[in-house]
Image 1 (cartoon, rainbow, N blue to C red):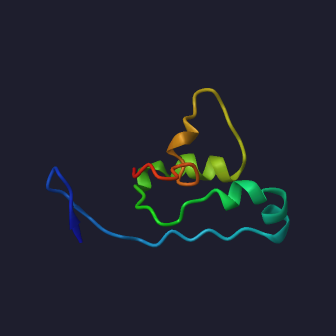
Image 2 (image 1 turned 90 degrees about the horizontal axis):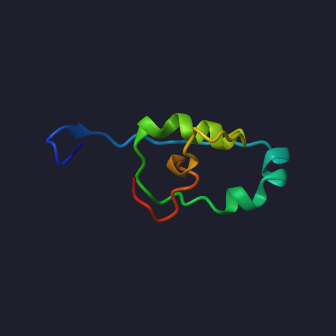
Image 3 (image 1 turned 90 degrees about the vertical axis):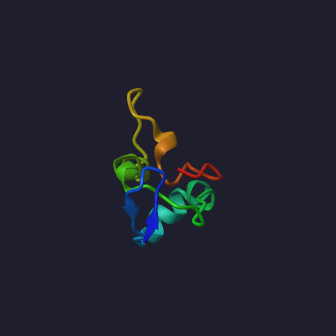
Length: 74
């Protein structure tokens, strides 16, 4: 367990993503851009799922997706 700045405890939980061969082929550049070595806050899971579905909307900030974080530790 890690303690955050506000004193609340956090836990590391594995995040596993499986994609089909077809998805991997059709979205190769997107998948290759993933940074898998960063911590992730689970309250941004909805953004990540929407991003995996390759959907977008002006009111959805996809920069919060784990698949778009690159070097930005969120």
